[in-house]
Image (cartoon, rainbow, N blue to C red):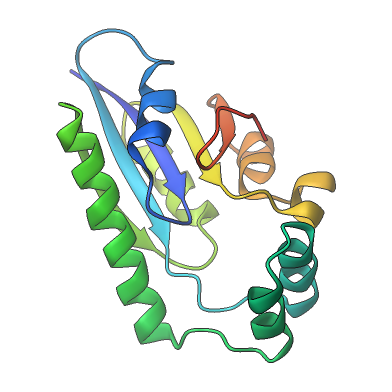
Length: 161
């Protein structure tokens, strides 16, 4: 029976991201199950601060003007991120599958941990100034609630969140 590494991401993972994730796990029989939230709703203030902290002025303006994707578009975006991410794992010679989940991914993580032989959860995000500082990010919430190791990586880097 293979062990599963749950990967929660808000965007398409790159080959570098997959390399950082897989470098942590040795052995055969590991499968990767990717979860991508269809994020259609954001807290305007939190989004504004996150974008400004990263120097993303256009995205900050979009947050203030509440230019968020409609639920159907958000789901389609998430599906595109999922397909591309699974393709990157597959191109690396790994076994991966996944699913699009709701805005709040914690119930999906909880269900996956209950239903599967999950060895670890890896959360890959961009830095989020407020959530990371006050430990309200996905990784911190999963650590508090679930009884499996949770690692938080910043997308495109090997930095831990």
